Each structure stands twice: as C-alpha cells, then as structure tokens.
Image (cartoon, rainbow, N blue to C red; front, side, top):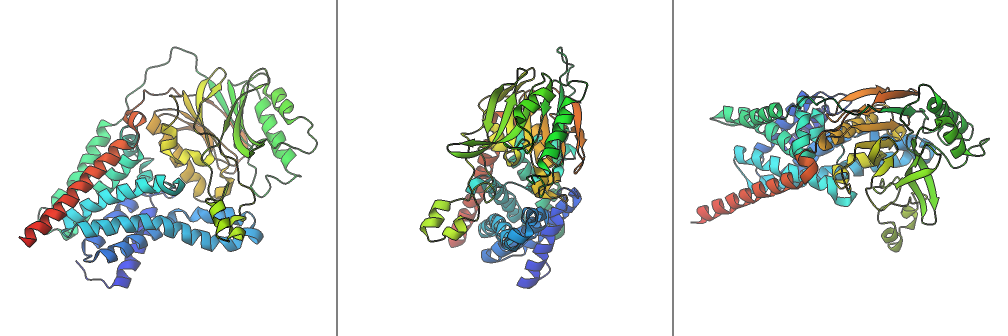
Length: 500
C-alpha cells in the first residue's frame, strides 16, 4: 500500500466516486464504474481505523452522488428568482445524506475486518445492505444505484432473476476484489473469480426466444407534447400544448390505445369549455389513458384516468409514492410543532396520496400497473402490485429533470423495471423520452428528448414471471445478512483466539 495522508485519501476517494459515476447515463461508461469501485477497494484495504473508513466511504459517496445526481439542480432553475438560492443547500444535504449510507457501510467493513481479502468481501456485503437501506428508509431514494450502469449490457438481464439488490451485490462482488490484484501478495488471480462467476451467470441468464402470439398485436400511441416546465402552466401556452395533444390523438390510422403524459390535461383551459369532451372527440372511440390533477375534499391528487370508447372515465389511479420536498414536505407537522413553520411552508401545498399500487383496466389491451413519474424508481412498489398485470404504464413529466442526465437516468430505471418483471412498458413523458420498452429492457421505439410528436408502436408480449417478480428483494437481503453474520462470527472468533 502507498501511504496516504488523511486529506489525500479523502481527495482520492472523492475523485474515484466521480469516476465511478461515469457509468451512469448519459455517459454510460461502465468500465469507469469498475475502475472507480476497484480503486476504492484498493483505498480501503489500507485503512487501519474504522473512523477513517467512515469518512473515506462518505467522500467516495459524495463524489459519486454529486456528479451522478447533478440534475438535482434543475428543479430549482425552473424559477431561479424564487428557488435558486435553495439549490446549493438542497444538493449538499441530499448528496451528503445519501453518502452517509456508504460511509456507514465502509465503517462497518473496516471494523469487522483487517485483511485485504476479508475487507473487500465485507465491503461488498455492507454496501449491498446500504443500498437496500437507501431504497427503503426515509421514503427511499434508490436513484443512481451502481447496478444501473449495466442497463445497456447483457449483465442487466440478471435483474429478471435477482433484482436490483442482487445486481448491486454482483456488481460489488465482481469489482471491489479487483483491488487484490494490486494489494495481495499471493494468489492474486483468485480476485478474478467473482467477476468470472458474474460473467457465467450473465451467459446463463441470456433471454430465450419467445413464441409468436396467437392473438392480433395491439398498437399503442404515445403522445409527447413537449411542454417546457416554465411554460407548462402559462395561460398563453396551455391551449397550445392541449391542442397539440388533441391533434396527435386524432391522427390516422387509429391505434388501440392512446397514452398522454403526467398531468397532461389541466382542469381549466382558456377558450375550452369542455376539455374532457374535446379529448373524447379527438379519440374517436379509442381508449385514452392520461395524467390529470384531480381535486378532492382531501386535496389534489396526481392521477391517471382511463377514458373508455364510450367517453366515460372508466378507471382512475391516484399516485401514492409522492416526491418529498416536491409534492409534499416530510414531517411538516413535526416541523411546525418545533417552531419551524416557515420551513414547513416551503412546499406551498401538500399533494394527497393514493392508497397504494393498483391495476387499471385498459379496454382492448388488458390490465396495466400505472406508475406516475417517480414511482418507477421503486422496484418494491412495482413488486407490490395486487396481481400480475399485462403491462407497465408509466406517465411522467421529466421536464423537471432538465436535459442533461436526469431524463436519461429515469429511462434507464424504467427499463430495469421492465426486465425485473418480464413485462413490456409503455412510457409517455411530457418532454421525453417517450416510447415502448420490451420485457428485456430494450427500447422498441422512442421519441427524442425535447421533440413534440407521437409514436405508434406494437405492444410487445410479456414474459413469464421470473424469480425476482416472485420473491422481491428478500433473497438478496437474506444472503447479505447471512454473509454479514459470517463476518461478525469471524471477527469474534479471531478476537477470542487472540485472547487465548
């Protein structure tokens, strides 16, 4: 090991975190993630004190999230005069808070082990548990998980069997031990075994050809109005965006289903007496699924409505996993009691939350699991559907995420959900990227970011449910716990032997 001062170690950890984030969209340089994680494994093997491990892990995580989630600044720039001053604070606390998970996991690995081989093994286990915690705790935020870097490689097909937690474990197990090629004094080639095992599993997980359907294929039309966020609610532009969607809906030939994006139809439009009637007329008997802002005595719901061929709202879904600090303020009542009422009023009005995942019936298509924007980030929400749908249906407004990385990363996560469930996904995004994803995570066809238009795509067939769709995150969680228990036992046994 090269001896590093604490400051140089933290600086190098920060730099390696930035390098590792290059595997995320839009760069998608997955070898950079391998290099970053392997370099961090090398860095951690030289740490003697667990406390130093915490700060090293935190610095790596901060570099990773600060670069990988750089799009977090975009929502504050929609109205910079009002919200711009909040951006530095929100980004620092968000990225720094997420990095705490990796800092705590690195501390645990350094406390449990001392030898290089056992340390990188412990790190793979504790980081997998940290990523599970990041996806579930405090409403969860699993965005930019390291496993996402494989989305355009055959490795992504492992999601069908082991899910995102299992893919994270495979990623850490294959990359962190590569540090032993530099650090270990003997049997260095053993560091390649986990990577070889993941490669073999990838070959075995390769998808098999699917048989042709006996029923006629269905055509879905995805509508993308391209309403910029700063103009979306401007009274002068609302009729333009609404008419654009009507024109796309009325175009010939007729599809079997038309899908509009999130909150595509305001309740009031200047010069339009009956927005719902206009949609029904444009659809000409074709079912339409669209996002609406629905008022109720409990507040406003971010909803998906299904309009049947007779022009009736035949089904309705209310978004249940809301965006913290965007659609509601967590613990607002507690903040008010603590005298922080001004902070509690930063979010001008909390959205109401729906009861949970549910399916909607799409006439002529089948049952769909609606995912409104942020909900597609959470694999556990998709797995908690009351029964298996025929397809996944995501409507979203990615205009909030800017045009650099956010929309591309959101699409990557949508593709992951399709692979995990073995289901096709129809995705309608306000400014893009809209399209249809097959059950292997491949984008069948799409509309580019920032371009208005519509797309008619044949709906792909679903696969049979895989292991992850049946079990969820439990296998990866339990395996990680068993490995962690083994490491704890090893430490206690080593201490007992030393005392003897």
